[in-house]
Image (cartoon, rainbow, N blue to C red):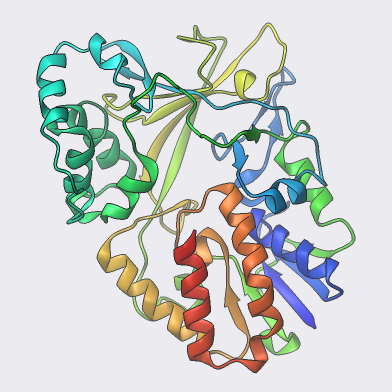
Length: 374
């Protein structure tokens, strides 16, 4: 098959490599001047590596994902631990029951936890969170962070996000992820992705293409943009970044610290810790959420019922086209962790190879099922 992949981020590069390895003729286009998408790594003046679109820790349970990415670079073994600052004090994230003792309203919090419902209220994000944490903890470190991050009332977000991303630890374990295999590529994500697409025809600074020239076009770009916003714009959030050099860091055990009570920033990241670099200097990145528009980079799909309905219309429309197949966070309008982005690429190979042989309804159902499973 002759295949074009649109977008050279992690999803696009993974799909391109997997299909190339299966003997297909694959080309890759990228609108920016380099491959990597939101995963690019830079090296600063002090030789410290950093990710200009935000820190990213790779973690995976799947052996096929681990083995795949490990083909292209070694990983540094960094195990991600995250903190959060509440009322000027540093706490672990996720919150642990032991850490609650450090909060002034601990008695009320423990009482609320004791009276939590047996079944999570899945009406919306806020009701689900209050079912998990109680109202006081929710107010301390979830609500304001969520409003800043997503730019909508938490009641407008679906409950799915609360159950997947938030928890209260019953034990004292502080690692953010429970996967045994974690880390960042030793030479950075740009290096890894460039090696991933070695031998594949790549065109950067390219946005135009003729779908008729290919058996399948794999779309890892925003699906609403690709369909000329026929059903309206999907909501995405982006980030604005500020940097600080050599600032005092609260605890070197934490590579990232959430700032739920800050008026603008949601978190800060210390790249020297994340990349496990030895240096007398440090580089800290502060992240401020912004609405994604024509002038900013879409990073996070906003998971509301209305957005999901609009996306569903786009997915049906794309599946009804002759040869366009969406993939990745922007193509599938789904917040995918890095391991899940690679997992989706693996799962999509069989659909892509049979694209011309299955009906639009079959395409829609299969793609929908894959997206839902991750």
